[in-house]
View 1: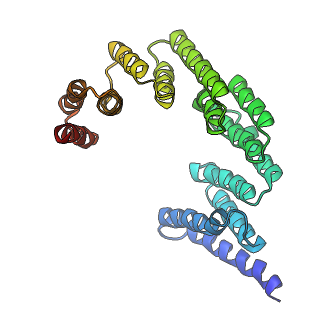
View 2: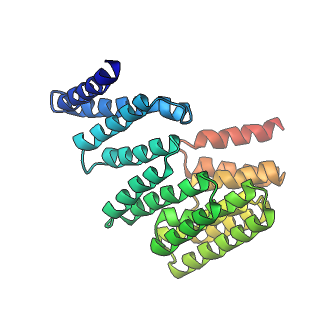
View 3: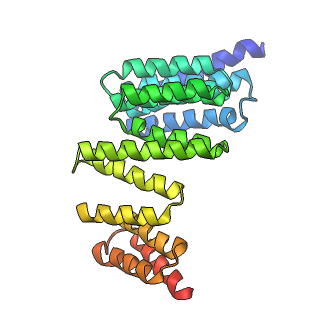
Length: 280
């Protein structure tokens, strides 16, 4: 009897939630529907797949309810990705890939979403231990969606995989290829947001490789082309302070944040940096 009642009760709860979306406080009800879907997924994600079929199906249905109640919205798109993650948590990679494939197909006009779905699908192979297939698909994303931010992050992702798995030579090669790619794109599309994004990725690569002097030199070069933002200045200041032990240079950079961005929230971090210099 319990097995018969559970799906019925589950369905009634979801229908009630969907109906409430169209009552008073529509926005609140929609937000609550998303919140309840996320809550229903917690047992699946927290128990690493060791969860009852009932809890799994409940979570899937809740996210399907979000999709039905809010079609063509960011919440619905996120719900579709969450369903894919639920299948991964259950160890059902093929079904997860089916979900991501549908998202990619439906996002033909939104390359960023399509690339993100393809990336999620590629990661399922990595999770199952098939890095060869995962890397093949990752490189395919770079070819199919070359100018998306998701594709641009992939060279670093590949390098991190090799570093994480104790393959330093391959990691070094992958990082070098990433820098070459980013600099080539930045040179091809100068003075654009895409160029700046690629140049920021170069900074990230140099930091991950712990090439502190090269990172400083590169950031200083960026300062000749752009007005450096407070986040980049803080990176520079922290390199001087914590890695190169150049307190005088660090102080100048932190003070620059206070002068150029006095109302920015990161001013607090700059003051903390100056205080740490005074305490040392």
